[in-house]
Length: 104
Image (cartoon, rainbow, N blue to C red):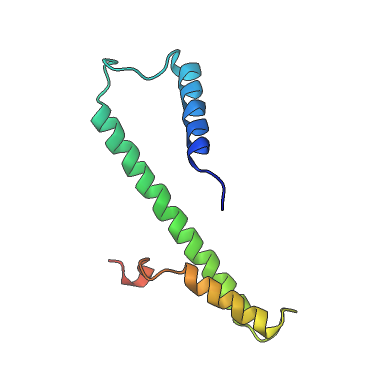
């Protein structure tokens, strides 16, 4: 079984609270004059940009790696290992990620 995720998230939340206290002098609280929905919406927009960046970078990296593994020469990797790597790469290149040429 893998590592527990919840304790890591709790650690991250504690770290974010400490950062906020250092930067703003207090933890986040209600009635602070901010529009929490607008703030959250803007954070979600930022998140969508970071997620798309990560997807695009992962796709590029996997594409380049697949091309390198497909080259007949230049790598001292046995063919069965290359095919195994290509199969794993193909598994990570999910069909839910649209091809950049398909985007308008």
